[in-house]
Image (cartoon, rainbow, N blue to C red; front, side, top):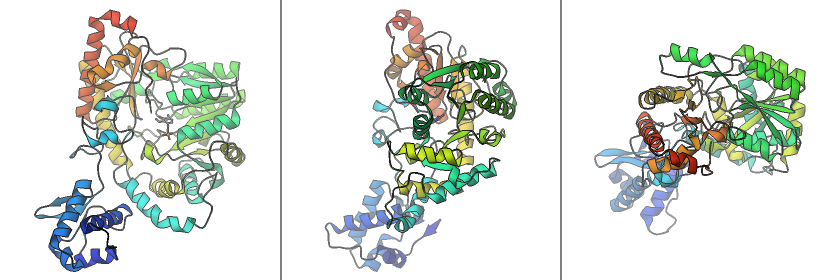
Length: 511
Ligand SMILES: Cc1ncc(COP(=O)(O)O)c(C=O)c1O
């Protein structure tokens, strides 16, 4: 923790008083700017009101009013006896930490992605708020680097070199030697998939997908005019059950990749692409073992299929089981990465790793979508990727607690549900006692929650018996959510005719 003297702050403030009125507002604005651009670090104790008013030669009332305004805006804590400290506004209820969910009437309801409308507990998003202050610090550093880029045009289809180098170094360290020329920066993983589809798949082309799979990826594949070819997971002893025992968590059926089925579909249908999420598969949270990765790469090569591996959730490795990135098994693999789950979805920064030739193709295909990513985000992302592991221990520890809480709550309140044991990622995939997923989703808001119906994760109406339940909320919110699920299911059981009349779930955003 640092502190600033009155003369130190007055030096940083410089010519703050441009004569605008009221003066206290002007003073508050300049202090806020210093905090936002990183010149005054977070958690810095500011000088007392008396000392600052003397140093600036203004009335104490003016400084009191400026500090008061900053406190109101969330840029200062403390006061009244203790030194005021700098902070950035939290749009979530005071006193909560990593996993914060807004309450009704909270200003957080106006922040994108933090809450479902009307303050419902949101189980449709499997996403987290930003990783502490790391993201803010990266942007503060980026702001000081931006002037060096301003003389250029600012368009760069491949992305900023320092970021591409940082991403390449991560792959190299993980066992997949990579050059910066093999990396293209994108606006997140979803954007990356769209660029890959646009470049490598034509209308009517087959694209193998796991079944269930990530809904927005299925939408992208369908929107590209391709035909998704689903391969079911097999129920049975996978990594999940072993993990559950090792960690003493309560869990139901495991799900695992059915390698025989994958191989058969690749061989018989020879899809143009195969889109897979081996690193904490969304929605089941399963991890593909190295041996299966090797087999999958071979089978795809034999079929002439381009393997597209989505590693968006790879860093959320809750049980610490080590695997090699799929790209380590073959240079032909196309990998998608993102900072959305390790750091923050609001960064909208991801990447594609592929051969240098393919990366050039992707860059050419991109220009019909956009002309490059925003540079500030990329400067900040380069800092985040270089210190990628920094925010992860706290994030993983909190997720482990929430996972254990969710599995226990489900076992306690909904014992007839069978949840997969997710060894990583952000969600469990639950088998329901009856095909009620859509009906549950439709009545969920009456019970204060928002859900994503199971069929969103499949093709042709499958998964009416399943529900993805994220463990991204703190345990107390999860308890409220599971009790709400219990009540919603009770309502359906008490009024079976509801199930027949509630046929379609509202179209809600999912992540
Ligand atoms: C498997 C998977 N891929 C892609 C995405 C989207 O990532 P991004 O926010 O980087 O576009 C998500 C987000 O939930 C995801 O789970």
